[in-house]
View 1 (cartoon, rainbow, N blue to C red):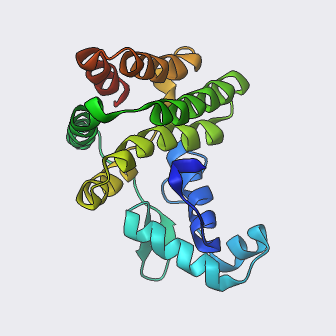
View 2 (cartoon, helix red, strand yellow; view 1 turned 120 degrees about the vertical axis):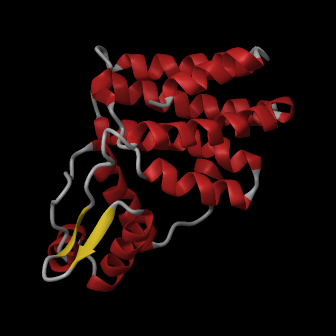
Length: 202
């Protein structure tokens, strides 16, 4: 069961798919998202599409511009990105450090399954799937902490970070980074796990 989520509404499912496309770069800054076109694409009425677009606008991934409608938001500027990355790094490392001593076999099993999904996506070159599973891994850590304030802090920050898989000469390096995080956690090497997590967030 992914991230212990029991049920996803239709707008949430559509928002998830569009979110992955924005974060992976399939949908680019400035691209329009018109309700009627998106509703035809997903073969649903405009109501769920309107709600999905509203969610993504709240996340900061889309912007509503007068006389232009909804468009993909501009990328975070290069000058601001280090700040955003630093905030995300601080939140996730705080979470991992806080819960490290309580991690159990069920956690490790669930995270192992996600890391294997990351490997499959890397091997097949499926960037959309890689975005999905990459976010699942980090969201699983955040949700494991169990604090709603942490989730509220993390969500908008991670949404402002485009997934820059182009930094990898070999896409499998993304899997290797997540593998290192999990292996260090499994072995009880706290400082190594924290360093590996911080290195992954760029």
